[in-house]
Structure formats: structure tokens, C-alpha cells
Image 1: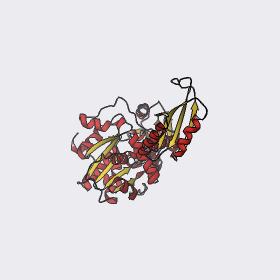
Image 2: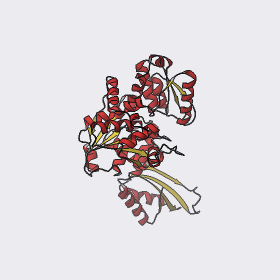
Image 3: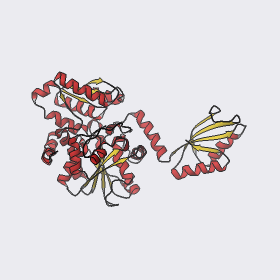
Image 4: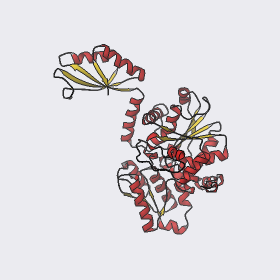
Length: 407
């Protein structure tokens, strides 16, 4: 793709002028807690506080605002499982354009409800976002509506790039900026802005390991379609980036790394507990990469992490927190096999009490298929301090003569 297809600083500055008075100013805050834990200055760009709960309003508003009067009259259409849907819905309402949003039937109810509340006509279609995307493109063709893509559009990328300008101004000493990557619209815009305004700054993209479309495209030299996508970070769970976003990544991004589900959940839990920040999994991948030591740069150099969104279903949040507790060594589930005679369960619980453990749950039964006639199974869920404490608990219980397995 020729370099003249890349979004310029002038285009991003123009988007910023058009978004004045529309965006909610989001701060970039230095975290003393994270600096102590991670050994380097950490800035957090708190975009989860943005209108609609994510950065998506930036690109959606700028794209819709650029429509000709006849295009506005025809309305806009988009497809999304959440953040893009809400960004397009609110932007269309503010500009006075009718929006139709196709969402998969699996979309979280709070996101569907919020999109409707912003004034869009929501159509639930298919089981995955790809199904909704096909329906949206078909609707645009049949009704003359303008399709608003989530990332594959220069105006959308320019709008997302306004976040990069803010980071440069708000964290002038940050030597590395870490950005979540899904389809690539956010990192394309941010990297274009940062490299133009402060060329020496490193830009690192972060994907979920189960949805590494940009990393695969960079290796192969062109967009690839992943056979499957598996991650809790649904906001960045895309099968393929576009040629346009890949071109920006090749031109401006210094590195793209991946993080595991366990690393994402640990980061989300740390943000919740220590920073009082409710961030969705896709918004936490940047911090996950920093915690895992994957962003590079000088060991003590300042890093700015973009927390791109906070739209997480409370039910999903509960599950992710539990997953994070387990991954952080704070949650231990044990299967203990005991002789089926009086006093064995009491002895086990006495040993647990002697360790000063908080018991979250106890299950006692005789139905497991691998039990002999004189055995019972006890499943214990315990609260522990860290991985070392987990190991100590298992060792002590085994030293008491128990057959212990970690679940």
C-alpha cells in the first residue's frame, strides 16, 4: 500500500478539531502503585471513562460527521458486539442521523440495551460478529445506508488517532506507549499521531494470544484470516486486520506482542483492586503485557498504557475476577480423598483452620467414579495469599497424610 494512503498528522488534527466539545476529556494518570509493583513509571490513559465507555466514539463520530447531506439522509449502518455499536449509535444521534446496528444474538444484554438507549435501531442477527457484519453490508447495499466500518477507514483511523495526540501531551516523558490491538484502527491512528508528534517514542501493540491477527499479518506480509478466535477479550477478538491498518502498523509500530488469558485476568484484577478501575479484558491487555515484561524498552523507562474500554458485562466481570484470583495464586481449589470413616472430614478442616485459611466452599460426596468403596471426596475452595502460599497449603495437607490434587 502506498505511503500516501496513510493517515497524516493534519488529518488527525482535523479530526481533533471536529471532536471538540463532543468527547469527554479522559486523563492520563501516573500510578504510584503500579510503579512500585512493576519497577518503572506507569501512566494509564483512562479511555474507559470516555462517552460510551470506550475510544470508539472518536472514529465513529469523525466518520459520520464527514458524510454529505444526501448520505446523512440515507442513514448509517454498522455491525458490532459492543463498543463500536455504542460509538456509532451515540455519534449518529448527536449528528442527527438514523443508525441501524446489527449485533450477534450472543452479544451481552447490557451492550445491546445501551446501544438501543443511544437511539439506534438494533437488529440481532446470527451467532457471531461475522454474521452481523454480513447482514450490515447487505442492509447497506439494499437500503442505500452508509456502512461505518469499525477500523478499515481513514476517517475512523484519524478519529482514533486523536487519543495519541492526547497521550503525547499528557505524558510527555513516556518513552513507550502500549496499545490494544483488534482490527488495528486504534493502534493505526495512535501510532501515526505519536510518530509524527514525537518520533522517538516507541509504540507497542498488544493482542490476545487467541486472536493474534495483526502479529500473523506482520509475519506474513498481508492480512490473514484466523481459523478460530478464542479469548475473553471480545473487544479485540477479530479474525483479520485490514490492508490499511496493517500498512500503518508496518510503517509506525515498533512491536506487536501477545498475552495469555491468565495474564489478561491478572491485569484486570490488579486494575480493579489497586487502581479502582473497571476495565474490560480488551482494555487490560496493555497492562498485562507490561506485567509480563513484554513491552521492552529500558527497564526503568516510563510507559503509558492505553486502557481502551470499560464495557464489561457484570456477569463476565465476576467470572474474570475469579479467574484472575486463581491465576494470581489467591484462589485454590483442591480435591482431597479421605477414608470414609468418622472424624476424617473434621481432621481435614482442622488442618485447614490451623493454616489460617478462609474457606470459601466445601463439597463432600461419594459419587466420583475413581473412588473406592471406603473413600470419599472433598472439594475445597480456599482463599490464599499468593502462589507460594498455595504450594505451602498443598504440602502441609499432604504431610497430614491426605491425598491432595489441585483442580
